[in-house]
Length: 125
Image (cartoon, rainbow, N blue to C red):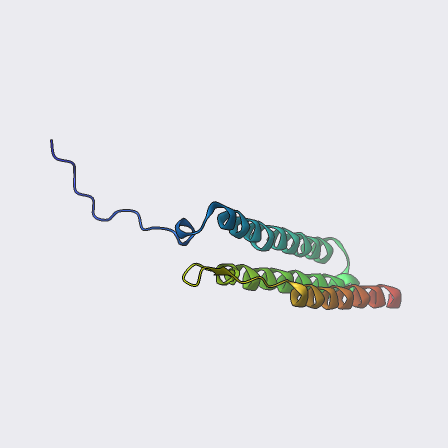
């Protein structure tokens, strides 16, 4: 009995060539950058919608600051998630270790700026 001819077999994933330990590391990076950063951004954006919809027009700048903050947080997560596969180069049989120190400093500056701006806006009301 002949088997039906399939148009195309499954293409191998980029993760198929990595060892199990490296696959675990790549998935951990994805959970952090695609998961935690995205959830935090969605929380900030939801909070901004809540402020804009429920409160008076005086709170519109506060909602706008949270909208910008959530958007920046989301795009930083997308940028970091896009670069995860560059840490593992199987053709050179090496792992490139790079800390997220620059990103953490950037997020700290953005967060402090946003919270100081919100505090100033609330104190001026």
